[in-house]
Each structure stands twice: as C-alpha cells, then as structure tokens.
Image (cartoon, rainbow, N blue to C red; front, side):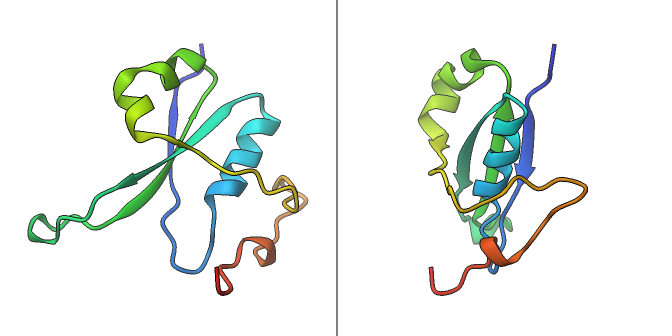
Length: 95
C-alpha cells in the first residue's frame, strides 16, 4: 500500500504544482492542490501544497474534497526525471 504524500510548492518565482502533478500522473497517482490561509498574528503565512495519492478514496474524504483543487494540466511540461529537468517552463513570468 502506498502512502499519501504532501509536497510543499510555495514559490514566488516557480509554478511547481503542475510539474508535481505531471510527475504524479506519470507514476499512476493523482494530485490536487491545497492553499493554506495566512494568519500573520500566529506566524502562519499563505502556502501552497500538493497532495499526491494512489488512493482515489483519499480525495473523496469530505475534508480533503473541500480543500483540495484540481491542478490544471500543462501540456507544455515534460516530466522531470534524473535525465531531464528545466526550470524555464515553470518560471512565473507575468502569470
């Protein structure tokens, strides 16, 4: 049984969620994005996370379903591997 994973992807300069989703899909997994709220008084700031799971029932859980959003596919992205990775397609240039 494969465990669920959480990947922290907050970045002002890189849009990493679509790449994580692409890698997950290539491994037969599903991915959804979650954004946490900012509560500066508690030292908590907005963050973006990607949930990855092989278990579709995980994404059907009420709390997960309420918070997790589909990640729009980016057909221009290639799956990152040991032999290929490029930051250029995920750079936030005026997006």
